[in-house]
Image 1 (cartoon, rainbow, N blue to C red):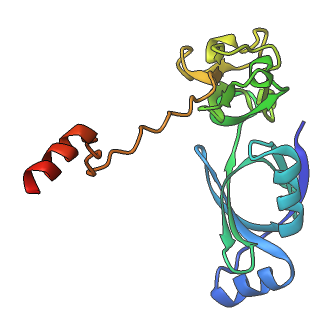
Image 2: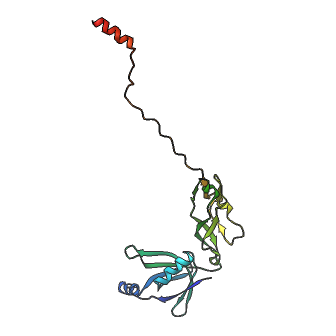
Image 3: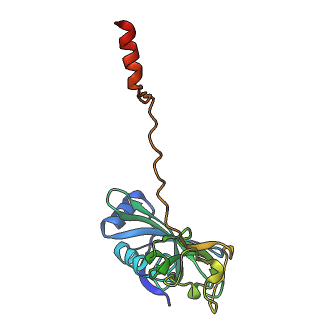
Amino acid sequence: MAIKLKATKRDNLQKSSTKEIRQRGDVPGVVYGKEKDPVTLSVNSIELLKTVRDHGRNAIISLDVEGGDTLDVMLHEHQLDPLKDELIHADFYAVNMQQEVDVEVSINVEGEPEGVREGGVLQQPLYAVALRAKPGDIPESITVDVSELQIGDSLMVSDLKEGRNYELLEDENTTIVSVTPPEEVPTEPEEETDEQPDILKDPDEDEDEDNENS
């Protein structure tokens, strides 16, 4: 289901107009599409950030453009002011709800592996997975349960649940998570020293030397 956001068409592209848009709490943006000319508009900055935070970057947004048009889009790129941490521009991509698109979806790990409780270490080399799906079938995220993993076990892309409405584009042999044995702390070698050990003399030798000297 698409999240609705109000949008205002933007015809004046001068720098002064863009500054006014940001001052009133909106962010200037552009909608691109394969079969249509770019559309310049603006949306409320806070509402857009809230949508991305609550529904993920792959959320389908229905832009209710002032004047009657409705555009189904996905957020393609956005720029933040590094000092103010505010949105300063957004690029949207117009989508056809009946055509598949390629996206990346984040992977969430759920549970504590049994192997970790036994001293193992959980490793997660893959944090997002590439997939192809119709816009309405794109999951917000993919959750994997790792609670039953023992030391030496791993979950691969091929282990993701069947019955999904999307096609995975990752190599099925790619590791998502694994539990490795605990790292062994190497024993420190004994320090070598250049000092030579003292040689014990036979006390009888000392007596012989004293007799010779007397």
